[in-house]
Every structure is written in C-alpha cells, then in structure tokens.
Image (cartoon, rainbow, N blue to C red; front, side):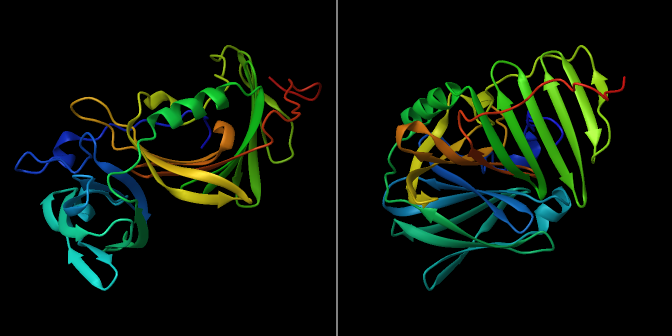
Length: 297
C-alpha cells in the first residue's frame, strides 16, 4: 500500500497443479473471472467456453495458507441447483454442470476464510475483448494527470499522478495517514499533519502514467462479461487473466471501460491482494511539487 507498483506473486507450481497434472488456472480460450469469497481468492474458469456441458475449474487461495485451502469445500449454485466441486489438488477444485449462459452463479467456500459471492457468466462463447483492453490502455496512457482512489485488501489510499514523473499518494490508517511526494528522483514523506522528511534523494523516477494491468500484457483470456453503468455512464465490463508462461502468476483483472476507452474502475485479484481502483479527475488540475519549506532531511 506504500508503493504504486503491485507485488507480482508467482503461483507455486505444487499448489496450483493437481496430482494428475491438471491445473486450476485457465486454459487458452477459457472464460475466466476472479472473486473475493470472504477472504479467499477464487479464480473461476469455464472450460470449454461454449454452451452445454462445461467444467468449472476453480483456483483457491486462502490467506491462512495451504493448510486452510486444502480443507475448504466449494459449491456452485445456479438457480435452484447446487453442485459440489471435487478436490483436484490443494488449491484446485472442479465442478461439472450444464450451464445455461448467461448465468448468475453463487460460489460458496467453507472455512474461516470463506463465504459466498456472486459470479456472472456471459452468453457463450464470450465476446473477445483483448483489442478493447489494448485501446483502453492506449487512451489511459495518453492522460497527463489523473487520480486514483484505491482500496487494497481494506487499506484505503489516494493517488495523484502527473506526467512525466510526479506522484503524491496518501495511505490512511484509522485516524492517521502517511503522505508521500515522489518528484523525479526524490521522495518526501510525512505522517499525519507533521513536517515532510526527505526519504530518498536518488530513488528511481516514478513511472507515470501507470496502471496495475499494464505489466501483464499481452492480455490473456480477455472477454466481455456484461454491460453496466458507473455514475450514470454506460460501461463494458471485461475480465482477463494476467498469468504467462509454464507456471503463471495467479492474477486476474476486471475493468469497467466507458466509451472512448476511458477506464472508470478496475480490480486486481491475486493471493492476499484484492485491489479496487476508481479513476477520477482525468486530465484535471493537480499540484504535485517538492515541499517549499519545513522539509527535514
């Protein structure tokens, strides 16, 4: 929460691969989305992504660790039907059902880290969205300034970015806060309403613009989930998977893309990492400058 760049957690092969060699992570062309079910990350993939009998491949990551994940039971409800998922590894579950998409599902996970959460599966086969995500990324990268209101696993932060290398971010801890100014190669920090202190005089310049999904291009399994509205604006909701290679990271994204490629909201899901961002004041006025006085080294 004190850096704009997310930690990219590599999924441990032993945790994500069943004893039979199956993986709960999505295959090419699967429709996939992530959910926060209680405190557990659930990656839900529909295989194959076409009407009829399908396999739901489910990835689990509980914050208590592999011991808790191993014990968790999972069910999937569609309308009046509830289907139990079969364990296929520590973090792997599989459920089979005839899916009448578009469908609203309810995923339930047992245990102290579990709970219930809704999932939405679009009409199958889903509409590809990689080009939409790429166009939205180009549009967002053309911004000269913007602000982000973030909730990262319960921790609230507020970021203000300005091209080329200026960032001000505040992390809120209960009744107090920590503010950091990052201008070029220099950083200052202050706690609450106290004075600024020079934290680093030769830090790497902050990359601006920066968005959480951009390091994960090219985008895999990018599909349109549904249409929705954000603040009265019509948006297209897109899900995509961020992992690459033989042992991909377990990381998913959801984006709310308005007309013209403007991203109004995004979510990032990874083990112990539930990040929800709202983008506001796009190309608006910002004031990010070194402290004029009162700064201490």
